[in-house]
Amino acid sequence: MLSRTPRHLLRRSPRVTAAIQARRARTPAHDIELRHGAEDRDAGIASVAASSDDFMPRARAMVSALGAWEGTGEELRLLISPHVAPHHHNAWGALVRLALADGLLDRTGEERKMAVRTSHARMTKVYRRRAGTY
Picture 1 (tube, rainbow, N blue to C red):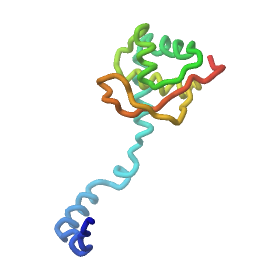
Picture 2 (cartoon, rainbow, N blue to C red):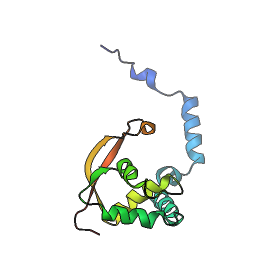
Picture 3 (cartoon, rainbow, N blue to C red):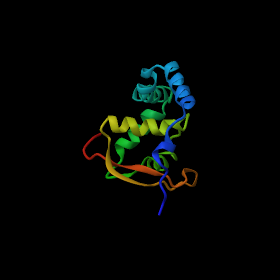
């Protein structure tokens, strides 16, 4: 059984409390809480897509031409990469994101381990080619 530390020993010292308050005073609350992550992500995806030369249109056409397909973004990359290669590896994520936005792919709600060795078996989302969209 684990022993519990008494609450009075968990309190911060006045010096530590003062240091934390001083740091918070230097950093406006809106900088801490409102990071605009979605805006930054969307801007990055748009930047990668815009500078992808012919990769994005060709890769999107290949996704569009898929029949009944289900798999991960990594599996999609392995399927398409022999035919067209992006200028930057982040373009693969942009491709999946844009295919979702265009209605070419749907999320299944499942996750599975990635297979490529350098992906270190991390979990990733599974997508399905949406039927009837071209």
